[in-house]
Picture 1 (tube, helix red, strand yellow):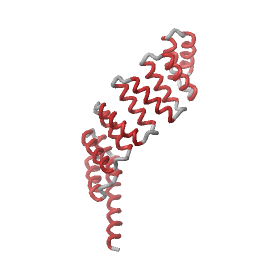
Picture 2: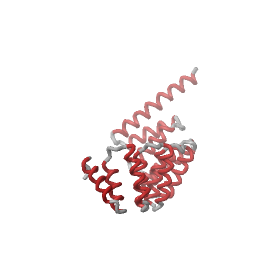
Picture 3: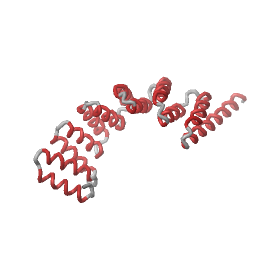
Picture 4: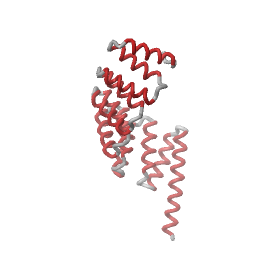
Length: 216
């Protein structure tokens, strides 16, 4: 009976401290927020939400290495949590530690291979580091999970354009239009590629369409 009372009391204290920490975060009082959250974590040492909150606040306060350190600690306790690896990867991305970012996204994808956001973010890093084919491959993997996502086709079209695979890029932009015919930017990009490969009549039609939709 007494043990149950202690557990209930500790549970109440934990949630009260956690709530105060989040309230302080919401008004950008990051130092106070962390004090409450560290106290809460001392009561419930396996609290994933506490670890996430502490790392998030450190990111907001631009304490990126503290954030990475706490992601590592959280991963030690929750090694099968894909989101932790992805969040850690994004901090590495902000620090331009691209190799570490890709390694963390690799692990996130290994644990949750149907999450298209992980492929998209990893593709951005690959593009930044010059691995355009790797970026294309990642978006292709994402498309395999979401075959009607116009943004994915548009993104892959852009990567192919950068690689000068113009015909294939046009095909991707056409698929993007198929799934969202109301985005003028897609018409403009397809028109720009058509113009490059001397399909000027088709290009003019796409430019006209983009203009009618208010882009130009």
